Image (cartoon, rainbow, N blue to C red; front, top):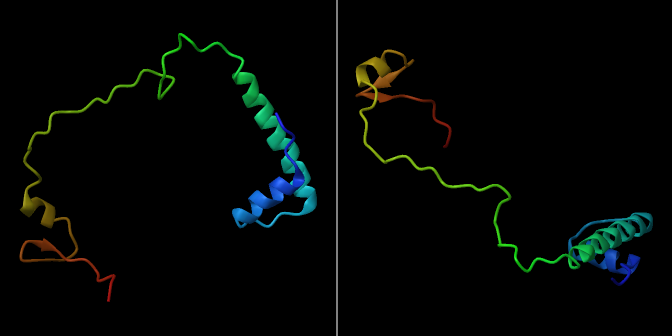
Length: 96
């Protein structure tokens, strides 16, 4: 893999609107080069018979049946609120 240069790191940082020093750019260049070299090692693996996956664990969506159930009794609920009017709970105004 090609060596990641300090100038490339500075250019990417500029595009991402990140302010970095020359020392940080040197440090990040070394780290990014190590990461890309590690990724290159993965290209050497034989993945011919490996099925593509989206998650390492077999996951299945478990959905419950969509059933209508009765809610709480309105009178019981209104007993526990500070203020109510015409069967509605009154709350403080938050928007003008």
